[in-house]
Amino acid sequence: MNNDPRQITLTEWDEHYEHLQKKGLREPDYGGVLSRHVGDGNKRLLKLRYDNSAAALRLWNFLLTEEKRLHQARAEGKKIVGVMKDLGTVPVMAYSLDNVAAFYPDGAWWIPCVMEFGAGLLEVADSLGIDESFCPVRAMLGAFITESHFPIPDKLICSVGATCDDFSAIAQRLDALGYPIMWWEIPHRRKPESDETAVKLPGGGAAPKSQIEFVMSEFKRIKVVLEELTGQYLNAEKLSAGIKKANQVRRCLAELRNIVFTAKLCPIGAIEMLVAEMLAIHFCSDQNETIIVLTELVNEVKSRVQFGKGVLNADAVKVFWINPVADLQVMNLLEDCGGRICGTEYLFSHALDLIPENVPAIEALAMMALADPMVGSSVDRAERICADIRRFGSEAVLISRIPGASHCALEGKVITEAIHAMLEVSVLEIEVPPVSDSIHPTLCTRLEALIETTKRRRTK
Ligand code: SF4
Image (cartoon, rainbow, N blue to C red; front, side, top):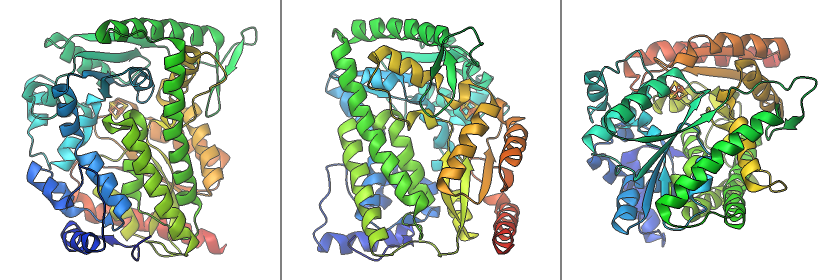
């Protein structure tokens, strides 16, 4: 910890950056002043508040240079794999091979927010018949057509079956537009029957062995496709090494989440934690760097906790956040209203759990894919959420509905009822559009009500 922790604006970061440089700041080649990313059209950055540590600077620079990194990978002759929808499993296979960069085109989800609609991606999606009745992932279509963001992947691999209607429809449209996709099926996870062999999954829950075997057969197909693409043999040894490396990332992230969510004083804000969690999905296109970035964050928060320093008031209400938020600024808003994040379920909790290392690699990956919270029922998801609420001592729950998302129409009600049946915590459901400025007063009123209700509950 090299300065007093606090949250600062982008403009304040400019001055602070100079100060850190004078004190001998050392940065990787993608480092630099944060405000330069606004020049790429990322206007929303001007409205966010950031952690003032060198570790957070590195995290943001790492995130905001991913497109450049992918273009560089292409220039260096690496194969680019666009993995779609499964959020966290197929990249482990891809990164087990040399000279591959795998990323989620789904990440275009956040472009309308970060560029405040400036990229025009949603208009492109509209023109292709994918309108606002779909979730913001439709921005991905625009990113492919305009080719102004990520490089067009050499291979696209997408899960179907137990996936949301939005993604299935959009990916099918993409395929029809001339971007061929290798489809693999993830079945809807069901509880094992009494006469079936049950397999315990990472993160809790179970699936019938027959489903694990089916997903293994799908992963064997993906393995062949990756081998053909790269001209390398993805043997069990390589895959196991890939799993170990992915687990290194997951261990780091688990430590970070544990320290931050259970600390007496919140040592780092919600936005940085969201970005850190996203690194686990595909390592922001550089696995080794992901480990360094996360390790620096862990060291920073450890030292803050040790010195009793934090970035929010000591009485901030511990909130468990469900679903990724379409507008990042709302995480700052929750903190302004007196909350802090202590527990999250951003649709990819299976990408945070450790991958089993005591079973054959393909089987371990099949277990992870079936542990995806989105391939089972909302009640299953709520059970996992409740277990995490207990673990982190969260006092309230916020469900942020995603505009247009097919699963959001009813899941909030189901999850709320399940939480109320198991725990005594307040639950608030809000809907957040990619740019939420016009509804900030309403959002603030609702968030303040959640915070006040929860504080009153403390005194009972
Ligand atoms: S509907 Fe939900 S799960 Fe599907 S792509 Fe959109 S955010 Fe992801």
